[in-house]
Image (cartoon, rainbow, N blue to C red; front, side):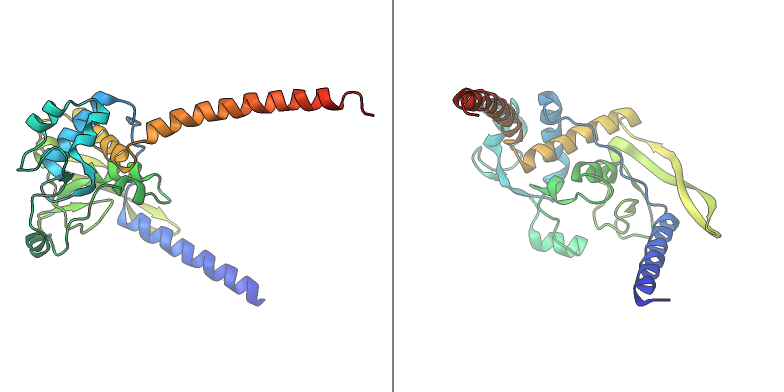
Length: 254
């Protein structure tokens, strides 16, 4: 066997082992996140969820509160509903928790979430897909310090802060045989304790939250897309006139 063939065979075996290990863990495929980047009501609800459930530990240090006016909120609404600390309307969205306490409790400082939706893209999908699946796949695990675990991010230091909305669930697996090995594949979920929301309502709320995180990563993206469409239309029109003008200039030249 040639050297090149050995390398190819080794890569194939490595890939097969990696896929087998992933199947054995039973990690779910990323669900497609709903596109709510143009839905002002969804973005406003996502902002409310972010402030109430995420901003206690996570910062959005590159986003200012007054920028939320871009999603249809007034300055009065921001002050009355989203400024839960002594922050001012022009301040950045910083976490209320002390960084040293956070590191002592969780073992690591909670990451800044300003561009989290742009930084979590991978082979499984977009960053929004990852977050949408991650937020919906927590389950009770008493062996962990927080009492919770996550299918997308096993052994995550983050507890399930949204459990009162979703309730308590546990994953249900089924055994299958792949390539002669027994693997455990996620079959579904068993609801142990109901939450204040139905599963559909919780999924919709997580879609709103992920949509807000997407918007926060690039607040001008809707404007960029809108301007881009007009630029492409202008270039198409300019190309047409240039083509006809070139034909007029050269029509008498053989």
